[in-house]
Length: 163
Image 1 (cartoon, rainbow, N blue to C red):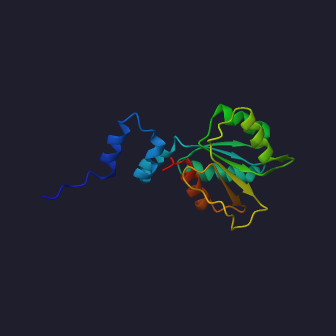
Image 2 (image 1 turned 60 degrees about the vertical axis):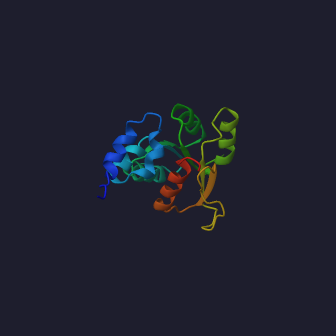
Image 3 (image 1 turned 45 degrees about the vertical axis):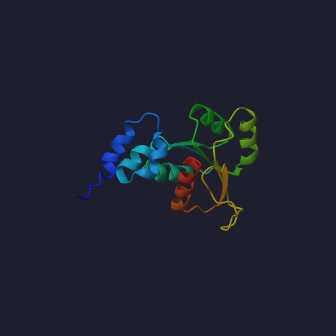
């Protein structure tokens, strides 16, 4: 007799009882409502000087179940990065008068975990940037304007454990 599948719900309940497995690693084992519960432990820090874009990021990625933090400049970036350590940082290269790469480098020298993956955003990049995200990779580069679905997939790829 063929054994009936326990389905996602029963399988997920089993895994959630296992405290040794970090919930964000179970993201791809679930779907729908349960995936949103699991993604809430994935913290994303968006750093950009464009208030409208930050509002769009917050709305879009909170609706997708991610825990979103924002920073508008290097000082806020420093504060948020250490107060709420993110799993992924999405950083604009041109932060008004500041250079996002230099601000990031400064934070690395002051104790920011270099293992935190970064998605650099640039209006100067082209759509064919040769640095796609991959599990275990620490950075990628994305051209503006941004396609939210592609950025979401990239963030989830970078936040997932290396295989």
